[in-house]
Image 1: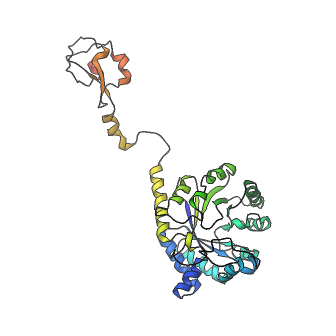
Image 2: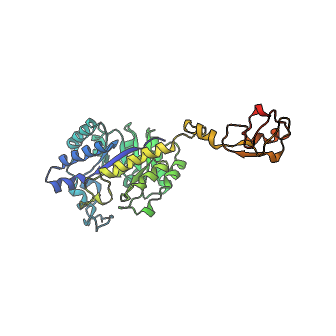
Image 3: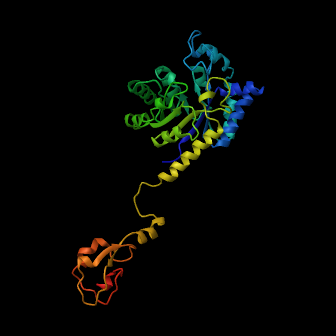
Length: 345
């Protein structure tokens, strides 16, 4: 295994930071990119939509309204839909200049089209898993496609996956995702990462996380151990801000912890080859056992079973040769507690 590819889902959190700091959303978005680059994140991800093309005006909220009190989806999206092609191009260039990949989830055909020469890969939301014509449109563009599969049955995932492949895309990431904000830990069901790997062996499997960060970022570490090659989590500069995604997002310190965990996991997992390590050579010799005499013996005496006891260190005849040694004669006078070697018998 190697450290997973880490995506910071900026989403639209930077709008709330802009409001709190009295700066423009574009400047706030660049602050997010700066912090992500400093934390060692691989990719900055945004969302591209217009309220009028993503949702009908009376669609009810499906999130925790004690955290985000907006009552309709339309109202919420309207707060965060001011960016268009020019803004995302500026953010794309800024992200690339910081050494990170850039992507944005398109929620309509116009966004998918103008993002084509910006994104390093397309990310499709769980909410569009059944939007097969849209999936085919994106998958036909020759870019890798990463798609979340929250709130779906395997049969639905299979349909979307086949649509992506049929459109000519061979580089596919399926994200295990729970479409609930925040996801309580007992609903995370990280074993689904392995389930997806079994069902879709030609795809890479990732995890898009909506569990609130814990002190040790154990959710993401566990996802990696379950086989997630790509990790995506919402990103914020301030988890206490009101707004759509801050309350389950990770801040830069959370992401640094997660990345440190991934590196530690790689370190301790090491190699799958079972052999004697360099660090074990001396302990192996000193901690194994040899055949040792239990009494003084004179030259010519025949060694009996009761004359031998296996003791450390392992520098003499191994106990596995006891049957060969019993019945042989000692060639010289030997004292009790002598570690036997082959030149003595």
